[in-house]
Amino acid sequence: MPMVLLVILLALLTYMLSPFWKSFIWGAILACVFYPLYERSQKFISSSTIRALLFAFLPIVLGLLVLIPILVVLVKEIVDVVNNFNKDAVLKIWAQITALSPIALEMDLNELSSQIYRGATVIMDMLRSILVSSANSVAVLFLSSVILFFFLKDAQSGARFARQLADFFKVDFDSISSLVISSIRASFWTLIVISGGQGLLTFFSLALAGFDFALLAGFLAFILGLLPGGTTLIYLPIGLYYLIYESFLKGIFIILFNLVSHNLIDFFLRPILFDNQFKLHSGFMFFAVLGGLYTFGFLGLFIVPSLVVVIRELLRVHSVAKL
Image (cartoon, rainbow, N blue to C red; front, side, top):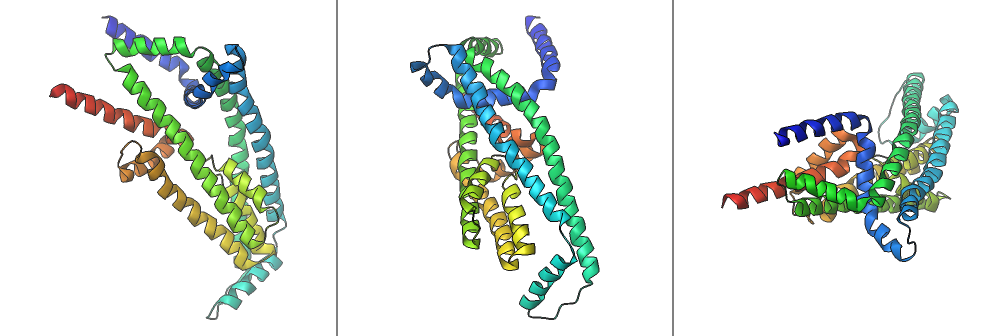
């Protein structure tokens, strides 16, 4: 009877907290990542409340101060490019294509111009929707920082409560919690390394193309690379600008080089940095992460690896118990 009652109460509590589940998960993920630094900071700041405030809100504030102006400026620049797009730009691009082509090409330029303009308008609408979703993300981010504050400040009491729940359901708290925390931290640092590699590739390609602010663009690509597809907000507008107004070949190079290399570095580095650490099947994890991204969005990068690692551990424990 107590087991049934506890399950019912937990289900009721989960239902009541369901509007905030994303914020709770993000708070838990950030707590797993920052808790070691939070503990070490005790040497310099004795108050747990002040330390929790610093770790919970300072990174969020700095991140917003950096990301929001970047997004606003990028969308404004792309809107200007689309608004200034005209038939002369199409003629210039088409002349460069026909000059490079070994065979004669014929095309209705009016139709080509309208199609390209419609495509550019779709891109502009997508970027506007990114701004709207970014505004929603700010609210989630703020609530996550509040939850992170309490997770850090009351970490010991929270761990005791989780241990009591695990003991009630006869689950090995130490092994499961260790695996979850390790997988979250591994996912986080894998994301940082991949994003850094994509930033370097962006810098390299733009420097080769002669872009004056290649270093700044590479840094911004590293920051936005923490979001799925975020680096496209850097290299795609620059590539389109080169394509239309500067050099057709340089524009194609910037777009294709970054599109291919960014996906390749993700495909090859993620198995090395995460899958091999936990001895997981790379092919299975690749599709599992894709499914996680489709189901949970960006959170899938952290939820799915943890689920897979825990499932494997539970199966191992069950196999040992049968022997």
